[in-house]
Length: 390
Image 1: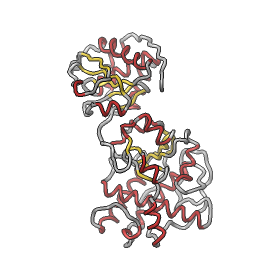
Image 2: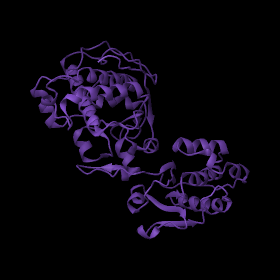
Image 3: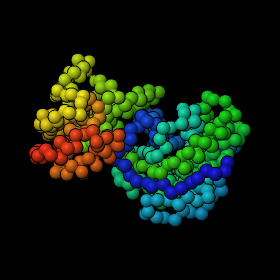
Image 4: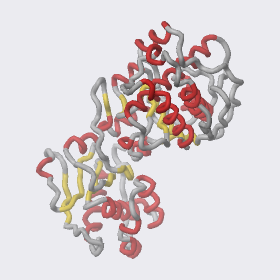
C-alpha cells in the first residue's frame, strides 16, 4: 500500500483522571502491556492486550508468520525529547535472533489488534492512543520501560516506541493481503476475507495519519481501577459502555443529561454525595447517598447565587470527609457553573483559571452558558479544604 503517512507523535504521561475524562466509552485505542493473563484477569474497559495468549504463541511458532517483521534497522538514537522521528522500518536497537523474534511477536500482536479493531468497527477517536502497564510504573520517564514490557527490549524512550507503533501499523497495512492470514493467527474478524486487506489498510492508515499523541498511563492499570472501578472488566465480563461524568478535581464530578445515574454508577466511581434538581428520581438509588436538592429553572434567567450558596458548602464538607460529589443540574452548563464557583472559592483560582480547568476536564462545556456575568460579579468566599483520602 502506498501513501500511509507516518509522523511525529507527542508522547507524554497521563494521570488517571485525564484518561477517564477522554471519555473511554467513545472508543479510544487502549493498549495493555502487562501480559495476556493479567489483562484477562482484570483490565480497563475496552483495553486490548498488547501480548499474545499461550494459544496464539503456539500458533505463531508452528507456522511461518505472514506478519514477518521487516529487516532490522539502525538503532533509534537515545533522546529525552517528547517527540520521535519515524524511520523506514521498525527501530532495532539490538541485534540477534532473540530481538528479531521479539519484534516478530509484537508485530503479530499489533496485527491482531488491528484486525479486532476492524471487526469491532472504526473507533470514534484516533488520538490519543493510551498505553497502560503495571502499577509500579509511577512516572513518565520510567514508562520508557513499556517497550521492554511488550518484548521490544532496548528502546531508550517512549518516543522511540511511538515511532515503532506508527511504522508497524504501516507495515501491517502493507502486508495485509497475505493469503494465509487466517491460518497464521487466530484473529477475530467475522467479515468477508476479501474485505480485510482494504479495511486494514484504511484503519492503519487512519491511525498513522491521525494519532497525534500517545499517552502513557501514570500509575498503571490498578491505580486507574482503584479510582474508577466502574470501568473494570474481568474474564469474559465486559463493562457497560455508558456515558460517564467528568472528573474535575479529586472530590468533584459534573454530569450531563445523557447520563443515567443509578446506584451502579455512583458506587463504581466512589460517589457518596449528589447535588441535583429537586425532581431527580432518587428513590431508584439505594440508601447511603447524601442528596442536596436544589430548585433549578431550565432557563438562562436563573439566579445562581442561591445554588452556589448551598452547593459549595455541601461539596466542601464532603471533601473534608474524603468523599466524592456528583453535580447534576439540568445539563452540563449549570453543573459547570457550580464547579467553577467551587474552584474559585476553594483554590483561589481566578474566573479565567477556573474556566480553563473545567474546560480541560470537560471540553464540551459551553462557556457562554455558565452564567459568566454572575460568576464574575459574585464575591469570592474562601472555603478552606483539607482533603482526606485523595
